[in-house]
Image (cartoon, rainbow, N blue to C red; front, side, top):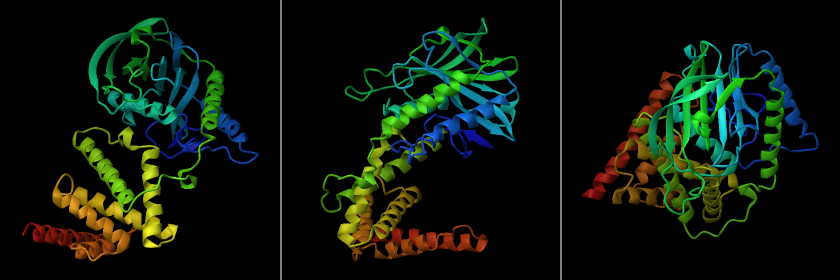
Amino acid sequence: MAREIGGGPQDRNVQRAAPDRAAVPMGRDPVEGPAAPDRFAEQEEFSRRALAGVDFPVYGVAAGPARGGEALAGFDSCGGRVCWVEVQCGDWASAAGPYVTVRSYRPGADGCESLPELEDVVEDERDRLYEQSGIDEGDGPGRVRALREWITVDGEPRSVELHEDRPVLWPGDPGEDGAGPVWAGRLRVGGQTVTVCGRGVAPGGVELGGIRDFERHLRGRTELLRDLASRRARHVPVEERELPPVIGLEAHRALVAQSVAETAAIEAQVRAGRTPRLPRHLRGEVGAVRWEAAVRQQMRLATESREEAVAAVTAMVDHLNRLSQQTHWLIGTAAGAAAVEEVVRYTVFASEVASLPAQRAWEQLWRERPAGGGAREWEEQRLAEQLWLAAWEQWLAARAG
């Protein structure tokens, strides 16, 4: 399976084909060196060759307020055959739009891979806007409606059931003025599935038509990638920045708080039956800055090299993340706050904390985690985890007594 999201074959696990994902990661400029501009030409040619073999109808916006700004959004291939193609048009950088994406599936493709829920299509669109423009419309679901509308395809009105999600924002939230509903719908056209997603345009105002020539979409994609790269060319990696000074262990505590919140948010989504995705307010540079601040403070307070500090901070974060998953008391209790403080102090100072047996049990568990291995290695890991959890339970009982 190859998924094209930036002009080349990418990993199958990428959730959605967005023009900047993988090829142009948020906060990084992939244009490096004198020959780098050719990268975009190579990506365009790769896409051109792949789309030349498409043998099913691909639809795009033929008329309506979102006309213009056409670009290839992505495609997916399996077994050497393209199984879907997505195009976009409109104002990709604005929360107000108008902006529409149309994904056309090969007939029968929905039988070999599960189609995303319409709720996920909407969230993917909000993710795209956040990653490309930095606009956070809040985490969904917001105010949700199920609608039935008509979308014209090749001049023929077709009924489509829609999922509409209007963000719920507090006064003063970023994007409050421009955020509006995002909708997604799925319809059948001549035996194939077509998914449409839009913002800033009414579904009834969208007219679809078959695409006979992809050249303007290919050129539009290249222009978009160049635009994104240009916007990020001035970005300074967080490792090279001067960060605000931190006091004591505050950087470690802030990083732990965010990491545990991320884990809890993902678990809550899984329990609710939703596709797990990190809340947007926990993504981006906020986490990167907190991580960098903790690593620098670890280097200073523990007199460690950067490599040693990164390893120590990683083990600390994983320790508390796993503890939050395996216990009910780490979050929102006095005992949980005390446990966090002891893990942080042990990480930085190797202090003789009350939970020292649990700290040492974690060190063994972390050190001996299997990189693969067979049943024996995993059984040893399971027993080590039981000893680690038992040490924490003993600490908790001693604290309560």
